[in-house]
Length: 298
Image (tube, rainbow, N blue to C red):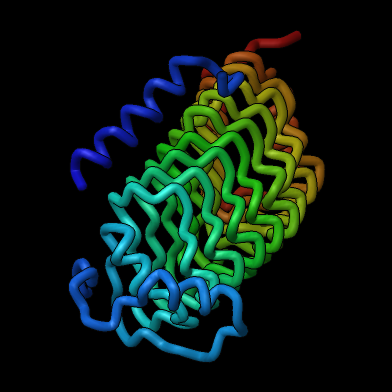
């Protein structure tokens, strides 16, 4: 498992060097009711009857994933980690994970097999796989906890077009090839937003449905030139931090009315200080106003 995780992380590093063009139960493999390949195919071809796995499930190999064939609900946490699988074929019946869903350190190139998944009651974490998009979870509508996407080879978030709400945080960080977040266009609610250290990310368009949020931190995304995507954002209940985005020149926060805590805009070397100051004067800020390290314009 550690060897596969190491190879996956090395893949992320090597692809980032190519540039932005893209150029609790443990392993359940030994349980007696693992479905045969024939049973898997039969389940895939027929309507899924309700079958529930009670408790947590950790699939650490192909056999572990196969053991969930025909299951419609996992009542606990589901972890798929360190496998050599390229997709999740066999999980076509899975509709609900009541706890956390973690998919990390696999050889996955897509998430096909999770096509009928509609809800994750806890957090969804996707980290360190070989994915270029999230094809396969296009029916996912709600996440009860956090959505974390980190250290992936994703080019886009294609596959998340049906996602409407995240009751926890949206964290998108250290994705070496990610270009945009357009697939989040139906998202209307998220608690906090953290988008940082995505070296190829050029746009935040796709977040247009967000009118209010808790904390927002946009940091160290070197190719973002505008915060367009947040043009419908009206209220930030917590802090708003925009820092270290070296190409950012346009805030595009035309609808913003209030920030409930600190308003901090720092070290965006192409963003005019007077533009930031004007915005700070036009909105209500209950915390500290911090404006430093931006461009001096006349």
